[in-house]
Image 1 (cartoon, rainbow, N blue to C red):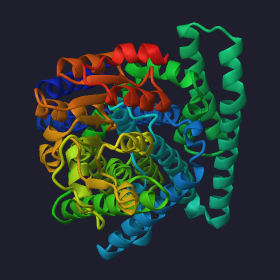
Image 2: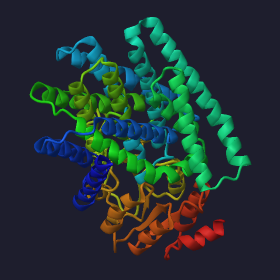
Image 3: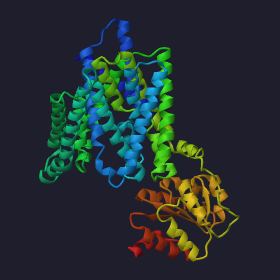
Image 4: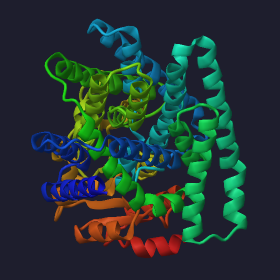
Length: 537
């Protein structure tokens, strides 16, 4: 009991430091565990190994259970082929790169396989939180990322089972994988038929939902044990079975604080058993981190664009997937338990995982994606002539309504210049002899290139309303009307306060948008989008 209380105190200190210094909590939690271990060594107090092992196993079970809840296969509908291509290409290529790198560094083939598999999957925990924070869960880019995560998790579970059974021979590995697939089909059946029936037929209160969710976790973990599979496989499949809407939202809301509690204890416990790599092992960790980030960003960017996604979405996908997964820790923990890898290698995989998880919020910033855009082979600014213009229209972001907007402007003999960051869009506009610039619409230099201050109207239809803030500030008090697409009431208020005119997407379809443009492009007086929206409704 004393050991458990010490872990709680360490978790509280780590979270407090995280909020005070605005740092990611995961590395601080692990450092707290390392500090506890060092303090115990100084005082001659041995850690309770049973307690630490139990906290690691329980925390990891809750972690993979939570990951499964966020990965509904319905997000893949209509995108199965590109998702499968991206997921398979990344998983196989990155795994092979990890195995090859490990072999070059002198590791035996079993260890190299564990290292390669650990690099090949990305963190559902980190990526989902990032997408939720940016409200990108339901964008095509977000659906691609979540679909890839689901496929990766399935692949690594099957590989983990095969590696675990490999000492007993090929037939044992095949039998283990077959058992995992059979349990997976059961999870799919529960996800598709049982959970929707429970949601529609039974009116469960919060306590019953909580108990039912935990019961599902225990049931699948028990079946995994009977099938001689790691109980963590059952935990993931239990979460997956509950990922159908609206059950996933209910479960996520109820288990949010509980999962955070156990995850904090998990990372502290991991820190308390780490053996800090020295010399060559530390250098090897850095090499694997570099291989992971470079290969993932380059490979996913190329493949995602090849299967039809925009350049920027492809680059953002590659950047967001460039970390190892909680399943990497699960794989390493299983390898240590089976005696196939040693504690030092587990420590190295844990350090790679936590380091890349910590780096993700920093390297996934929009300015990083835009910097990488400039390295794209087809990146050029001003591909078609952008002459000195006045009384023209500037379209910041092509979007779905871009073609019809340009058509409406041309029908009124208004010249237009389009700004977009996607190479495919720019190529299309060049072929149509439309003035365009491949650049970031939220950049003042771009606005200067397009002579925005001399324009009659500026349309801001970029993906994020906050990107329009720079354009609004740049054009405040100038000639052009600035029309900004908005999604939320607070965004419309922000646009109006900055002197712009919001187009509320909740009230306007693409057709309504064009009609609204057609009406107001002829108007010389002030624009009132609210009244226009009401007329169009």
